[in-house]
Amino acid sequence: MIRQGTISRRLYEHLAERGKRFHVAEARIGLGYVGVMLESKGMGLAALLRSELQGGCSVLNEAGSLAGIKVAVLLKHLVDGENPLERALGLASANAIISPEGPEVERDTIALMDLTSADRVAMVGYFGPLLKQIQKRGAALSIIERNAERSEVPDRKSRERILKECTVAIITATAILNNTIEDVLNSLGEPRHVTILGPSTPLCREIFEGTPVTHLGGSAVVDREKVFQIISEAGGTPAMRPYLRFVNILF
Image 1 (cartoon, rainbow, N blue to C red):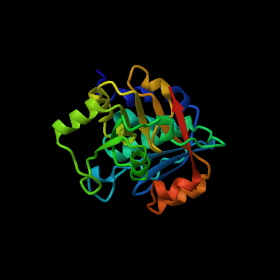
Image 2: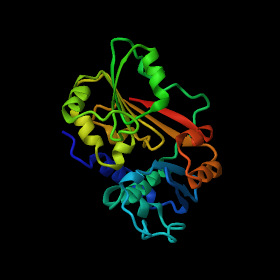
Image 3: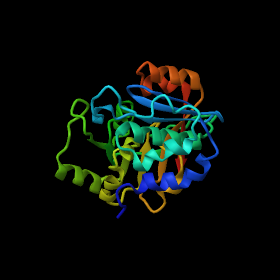
Image 4: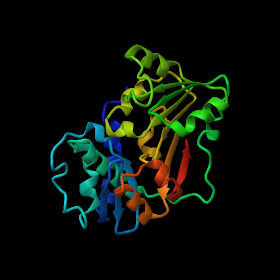
């Protein structure tokens, strides 16, 4: 069994020393995403679970003091963040340190799964653009989603069955932010393919050792200024997509 918080803790410990060498050039907080840009030109993203934020006129006590600090300070929020915004800053900082190069030719994430009509796909988090691709391959698809506006929310027993019986699991990287990823991984049966997916995904295979994860699908920022503009203007993944390159790591 993987203990709750293990993935965040591993990521923090893996990057903490490197984080002491870099300083934050700018942090940008929008309604959908958080972005952290380093003085060394690295940049990372993390989704903001704003529905879980508490109200109030001030959400981040450190506002006005982030530029110029060592990124290790923000990285620590991965493990001690008290709200979704702090944890998003921690994950965006981790992704800024990792800051992968974008591939010259992107590989299709769904194609890498080799789906057939014999597969049962569990999608944890709603990835609308992938639905038609999965259905075209004849695979059975079940969606586990917390937001009833996006998809039907399965009851606990149905959720457990879906995860236990799936042959392929596609898990949103935001599960790292709300500390549900370990519960999802622990609930899986014996799937042949498990993907952590989305721009928030830390492209660091070491932190998933000893887990069922076999595939990381994240992103590299290729136009930092444009992505920061989109974050500031409350944009999300579709708006940022032309300025990102998707990166796939298979184990």
